Amino acid sequence: TYETIQFEIADGVATLTLNRPDKLNSFTVQMHSELADAIRKINADDSVRAVLLTGAGRGFCAGQDLGDRAVNSGDQAPNLGDSLEKRYNPLVRSLRALPMPVICAVNGVAAGAGANLAFACDIVLAARSASFIQAFCKIGLVPDSGGTWTLPRLVGSARAAALMLLGDKVSAEQAADWGMIWKCVDDDALLTEAKAMAAHLATQPTKGLSLIKRALNATWTNTMDEQLDLERDLQTIAGTTGDYQEGVKAFLDKRKPAFTGK
Ligand code: T3D
Image (tube, rainbow, N blue to C red):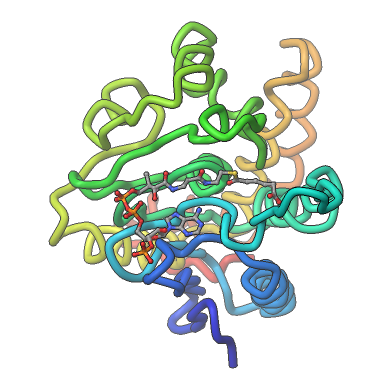
């Protein structure tokens, strides 16, 4: 069992809840290692067909726990590159590499690496009272956890540059208007809606969805020619799945499909 996160797998959905509410679920070394362990379990469990990430309490995640970064004069500067290499980058890479859809339910403020963790997920829902802050510039740091890659692609470079250089708070509604997230929902509806979405996805053609994720992940660096080739290759695989057969059959039979995820 874990101390800094909650983790459960039920009915095809793995739910990860960041759980240091007093510190707005900011990251510690322990939280990183517990998340890494849980993600390993997700990868090893065939029954998982969707993942839901959220936070306990009033915040989603306030980024690195700055209490662990207190420096006294004369101390050696901490090697933050090492922290990214050993913890933040593997976290973002392993989240992005998950083959099943990852939904993020941003229940409150998402700051620093907490905001960029959300943007590494596939579908982001946020509570109306939640907000997103690229807090890094305010303490002399560089946005990390993939934010300099994801945010310009989500909102365009003009908005990404201002957000990262000013560190302004963006409301959930604004974030949805800008296309930074999928949608903003009323606070008391957030978890219900996110769970319903995860439950729905867990009944869908999981293999097919993983191929869609591969296509979307490749699109930012490919030419259209390369992407057409990739679509051909992925569609070849999709066409061999049982779920594709079932989807076509159910359509022709005018009934609801029963997908197995394979
Ligand atoms: O170091 C490396 O390894 C490099 C990687 C860096 C990745 C990063 O994420 S760097 C960016 C770190 N994060 C921040 O700079 C954000 C710091 N937090 C804030 O700016 C504010 O707390 C928020 C805007 C997120 C929320 O503000 P507010 O007014 O709603 O809440 P609050 O009162 O500031 O925070 C509530 C409590 O959480 C408070 O503790 P207390 O006073 O009740 O005991 C506060 O200190 C604590 N808290 C919030 N954020 C952090 C934190 N404690 C430690 N670390 C935090 N990041």
